[in-house]
Image (cartoon, rainbow, N blue to C red; front, side, top):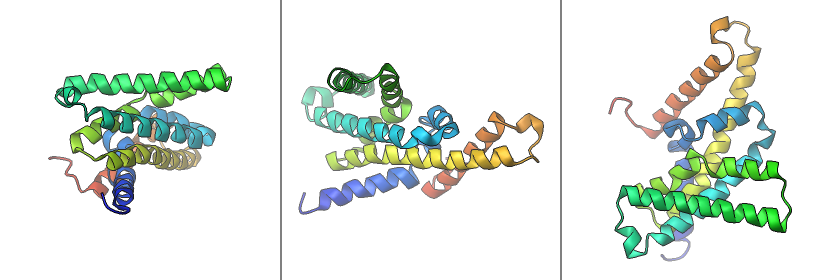
Length: 200
């Protein structure tokens, strides 16, 4: 690829993943974690950084492995096994590095595991595989997944504050039901951005 074309391909897919194909709202990936962290958003930036890290690592590793003819010839089930194995190995190696070299606490390793082994990160290599993205585009999806998660949690957190302060919500809808209705409305809005038909 000539010049900085790879960078613009990566940037294009990153922005597409964040705003058009926001994986939290359009696919429901990592929604439970998004709602949980929205209640305590002080860990949002760190958690989103973990998702970017694991998204990029798994995207790069899976894209490189797909150059091996035996792996490229695998069907969907075979690729699923490869993607899961790559994700587990990347988490184990990262956790061992933090534990042995940096003396990380078990609580930190637990948060690292929750961020790595969730549906949002696992969805990234599948999207790259299905879309036949190039290496730089695959990296863009990994970055975009973390930024999309940050945006989703930020919006959910702001909505939670408004919902908690609203005394006009009927008692049956207060709390979790109101939050899920709000997330559903956000999901509809992002579906509108993508131009997809709900009935297609």
